[in-house]
Amino acid sequence: MRAKLSGITDLYTALTADECGAAFVSFMFDMDNKDYIEPEVASVLARQIPGTRTVGVFTDEELSRVNLIADMVGLDYVQLNGDESDDYMRQVVCPVIKRYYVDEHFSVEKAEQNPAEMILLDLGEQDYHNKKLANDIVQLHKSVIVVGEIKRENVLDVERKLNPYAVDVSEGIEACNGQKSVRKIRGLFRRMGSRTV
Image (cartoon, rainbow, N blue to C red):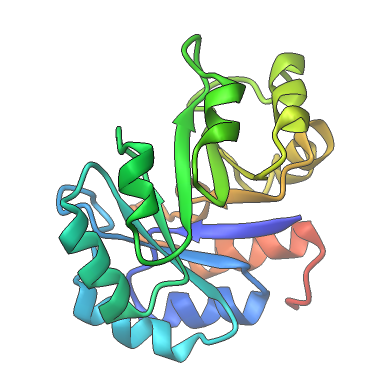
């Protein structure tokens, strides 16, 4: 199983994620997000971690701004968290990860048919032991990333129950002050059995 670390804002954290074997790091480009990063800074960080795929996260943003930042930073993926249409997704300059909240409105068929390369299922505070959720993931023929209160203590249980392509971790690698914790990042990857020491 792979890990996607979200809300990376500084070089030390980015280098730690890369060293530990993160498959992806996400930069938050929604200006009201607490982990917002200026595109110019993200561009510098991205160049320092060529072995890790970079993701830019946007919500109902103007397509022109999305594509401008994707080019500027050299993003590998764009993650769309809003109500972006299929036509919008087709016009993004790099592959798309589309987020869906897993609630009563979630449709496996809709997720399967959209043009996104990968699907991110946001569990919110739901219990990942949900058998329907595991069945939904099996039905999707796209790579599935799961997010929702994942941390070192439960990451292996999430893997056993849901077997996703990757897990997305943000709050689970934060210190008490809300900043990303290198110690927690290393602890997460030790639990996952990565090459970190």
